[in-house]
Amino acid sequence: DARAQFFSDLVLLGDAIMQVTGSERINYLVLCNQVPELHGHCVPRFEAEDPEKRKQGPFEAYDFGSARVADAHGQDQRLHTELRAALVRLLKNRG
Image (tube, one colour):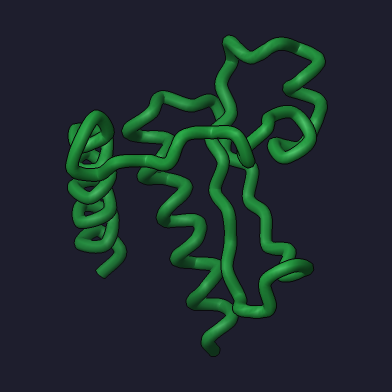
């Protein structure tokens, strides 16, 4: 079913993010409160984070509204390339 595939894909994305960023865990969020289209968020969380922030959800702990927009062709190109390669590897292993 489409929902099961959606969550399977979301977990695969989280695995790729962990591999590339070295994060300790991923916070998965599927809210659909403000945007009606089904979508998810995979937010890496790191061991080096402030202990108080680690107890909070990512949207409570960090101000994503003021964060810069990622630039896949500029300063974030290496991260984008590594994430893409990790996703390809994971998809091949999935079968």
